[in-house]
Image (cartoon, rainbow, N blue to C red; front, side, top):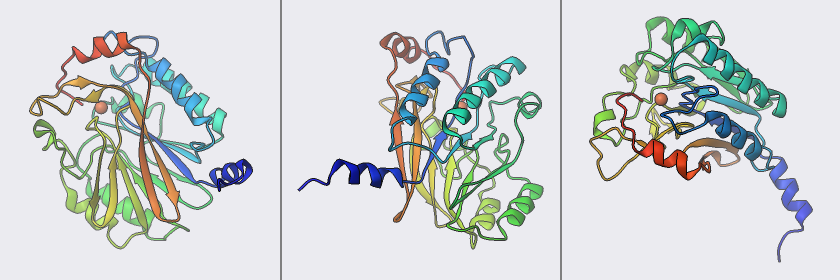
Length: 271
Ligand SMILES: [Fe+2]
């Protein structure tokens, strides 16, 4: 027998959900590669997050915030984040990627952030460079020295796991040992990264490690795996902090055919 609707809605309402946006490559009023409107994408994201199964407790952004690195585009993106923050009354944790201009991004967003939900802690740091510096390793170890309630989610840009795409395999995190030292024996229960522009799940130092789909252009995984060819949809991730541990789900957005056509024709060298 089906459960009464009230019970179903009640069980959804207690879900603890983090939303991860990655590789935004924001272009304000413009269109990325002449096709994709990131403003439209953000409108879709806000509409989707209104649904009860997605209602976030925090939003995490794992780098490559804007595409052209202008100060104006960082300010534009900040307004977009502000709409999300006001709509859902949640902290927005922002970290940088290799595509970001550190000086301009740092003028708008903090370089490290720690946010707390009722049950979990989110720790982010600047990973625009694929290497963790000794200072960052010390800072992370200090932050994680004390466990927090049900655990910590660590968010940054470069995955410590290699991509399936040959040309991207050496473009992940460079000194994984530093990250492993930080994560081992800590209360980190989930690592969230981006950079590859394709969804990927694995385990690093015993912790689930997720690379989110890009909110902008997606890697085409076949048939030419040796190439870096972007197109194929836009997406983000939902991380449910469930009784079974973190459950990570990619959410794919509806893009116009014209946007898809213009993007699939583009090949770019940098994620
Ligand atoms: Fe990117």
